[in-house]
Length: 85
Length: 229
Image 1 (spheres, helix red, strand yellow):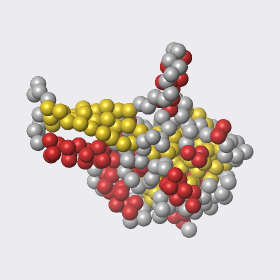
Image 2 (tube, chains in turn brown, green; image 1 turned 120 degrees about the vertical axis):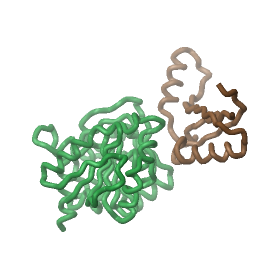
Image 3 (spheres, helix red, strand yellow; image 1 turned 30 degrees about the vertical axis):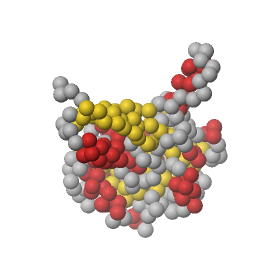
Image 4 (cartoon, chains in turn yellow, brown; image 1 turned 90 degrees about the vertical axis):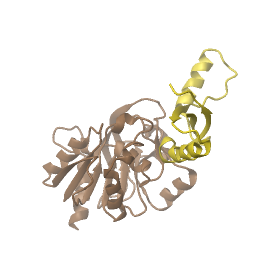
């Protein structure tokens, strides 16, 4: 089994109103040193497969097709061995 | 005119769309998203709502519904496709329209009457409407903040593909009149061939004798005029 740990995040050029709201909130809590907050999505997918190359190729396809919107988002992922539960 | 309205799981403006066209004497057909036939329509409507619960991103899962292959083929043949609200989101997700609808700048769901200005009369959806005409059409969305990269925006502007902009009652396009933070106050755009249009406001909610505004009828009449020309 392999687990893909995928981050889908907004491109730097895209405004993140949620991140801005969190920054404002943190400022109001007194964390003045915080300059910017960006919110992203974290997705875990379990693969019943041990070939990392195969899984990696599939994760790229899945991200391009569905998990990330290429207009506004980028993604990054890593694979790690996972226990079969 | 024959109008096919697609129902996705979570669509909730499909019956409004069917009713306003049926009331005007058009042949309307309700199409389930798992169907594989559009039944030869003149116009396909992707209605508003929350397809697949807006999971992942609005419209991102609906683009894989079986009927979408037919919708894309219909559009590529030059057939008319109108996406309203969630329908607009689905059109950007499936690539029939560029850009993306991001979360509103205020992070709030906005449900209100909204003035929009006709920016281009050279679409089937604004056929015969004077450019600059102001319409009062309700909006109801949380993800209507239109975004596109710089080159994409320039292409929309240069090729007269911005169909509606948010404005005030007098027709001025100002940041104050922009309800959701949309780039360049964009409320609706069309594709290069001008047969596919997406818009966040809901014309079908302003098109009967019981609604506060009936300005949605201008858009419906424009489509009728386009087909009877």
